[in-house]
Amino acid sequence: MEDLLRCVQGDITGMEVDAIVNAANNSLLGGGGVDGAIHQAAGPGLLAACRLLGGCPTGEARLTDGYLLPARYVIHTVGPVWQGGGEGEPELLAACYRNSLELAVSRGVASIAFPAISCGVYGYPLEAACILAVGELRAWLSGRPHGLREVRLVAFDARALDAYRRAIEA
Ligand code: APR
Image 1 (cartoon, rainbow, N blue to C red):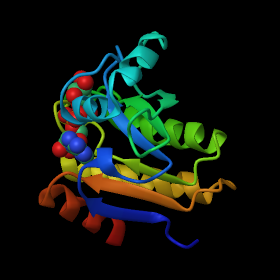
Image 2: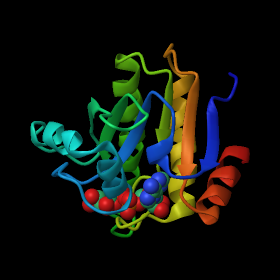
Image 3: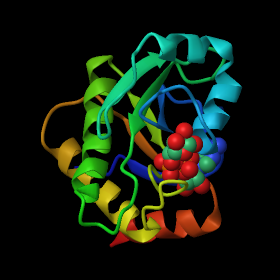
């Protein structure tokens, strides 16, 4: 299978892909980090749409339009808060990637960009999260027809880019 995975460094809000993934919280009412950046770039329409969704359980994903973003859709997913690794965090993080892809493909998305879900405020160890993300994405992509042409892993800094590169090249 030609590897659809790419890692890049940059700000996910400016990326010209069909869908960007937001590392949200259970309320879906915005926050800091990438969540704050996406809401700021998308404008108030995004929050208005999120209010109607009634929140999102950890590990699940919800889709909205992208409003003022270049991306057509935002897929909001809620990663686990790192509590040491024994509270089902890996399984929940894997579910974020799987559920986001399922939702994207159900809307005919051909290109999608992910931030490093849970690796900021939620404290998930970066290297472990990148290895998990690459493994989970590759497993899902090889398991069924999907129509995706590009899956972009977005690093916000050089350390994250290096972690993604090592996970992809391993
Ligand atoms: N573009 C791409 N990546 C970004 C951007 C951006 N503009 N801003 C931050 N990041 C990166 C961070 O460097 C980190 O690697 O996104 C990753 C996820 O970090 P957070 O945004 O803190 O998300 P998370 O750790 O999942 O915590 C979620 O933070 O912002 C709140 O409302 C959010 O409560 C939720 C919590």
